[in-house]
Length: 187
Image (cartoon, rainbow, N blue to C red; front, side):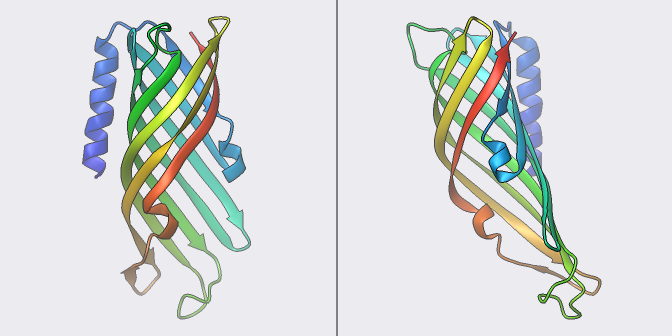
């Protein structure tokens, strides 16, 4: 899974370097702080109706004795559907891939034999399809709204001093919804 994403990101970077870009957009997802996450995007147009985007998010928070942290990388291709507007403005369809890696650490836990806590690593890989609308105001400011289905599959491993075992990935695997509202700057 990681190799596929690494090859995708490498192809994305090569393609971006080879393309004659019309514009660039840097955006921040304003819904991310609701789930204690920071999410940023870099979009680059590659033709009048197409662009590529690379997203990155990081999350890290604690609840009682549990610490949760991780990151994700999301390469995306956008096909703008409007005949009256040029990319990066208008309605679009955007297939995407996503790699996520999380760490969960519990200080004291009833789930370990000696109640001393535990640690788990979770890695997922998936993708989906977004439909969105992006507006450009004064040829500088950008508002991007998007929504679509996604699917992730992954593996999780719990660790303690004496053993390592797999466990269910729960809400992080399977079908879900990817949504956001991003504000940005076009340059």
